[in-house]
Amino acid sequence: MQNNPTNNSVNNFFIELGGLSRFTLQFFRELFRPPYEHKEFLRQAYQVGLNTLPLISITAFIMGLVLTLQSKPVMAEFGAESWLPGMVSVSIVREIGPVITALICAGKIGSGIGAELGSMRVTEQIDAMEVSGTNPVKYLVVTRVLATTFMIPILVFYADAISFYGSYLAVNLQDFLSLPLFMNLAFDPLHFYDLVPATIKTFFFGFAIGIIGCYKGYYAQNGTEGVGKAANSAVVISSLVIFIMDLIAVQLADLFNVFIR
Figure (cartoon, rainbow, N blue to C red):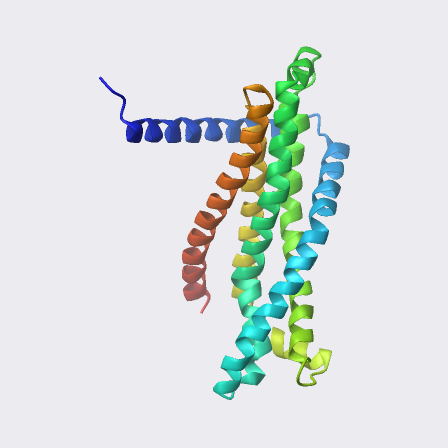
């Protein structure tokens, strides 16, 4: 009797989902159990911000510049050029900024965490920590997941600011608009119910990037080949989860807007 590839894929999916869920529960158990690795958490947070800052800066600047240049002719056709800063700001704050920044971090940070922990697993460094009495989940996993959870929102705010500046320069390529007036037009259409859901979902993006990267690296197998697979699958799965989370967040944000209004 031959195995059905579809059934195997479904079984592997549920096995992976079960393993990730168990790993997540283990993370929360260790999160509230002392001792707390404050220094390692701060070191990981610094590394997360430092490693992604140049890439996010370039991407966010180009994102704001291109979005403005592409939208300006259409807005001019309808005589709504004054609405351009507001349209760009709402687009960036609500969706483009959080999602693009999270995808960049998934590729940069998620793969790095998967490769780092995968290397430690295949070289038996994690086994050595367990033998020596050190809790590898608390020291390696908890600190990295907390670092990504709290640093991704900060990086998103930074990316939004850089995108606004790129948009401001794009507007001034043909016309002159002072920076205070541009910022006034950009922030005028933004409301409380725009900022809150967009900020909350970035914490979930960061948590997903950290926990998936740690899970794939922590259970890497088959030597150096397994390290590469762990890094690659961490990026792919994190990116997919980010899109799914964003889809759910959009639906919840619509309900939140109806409730607020």
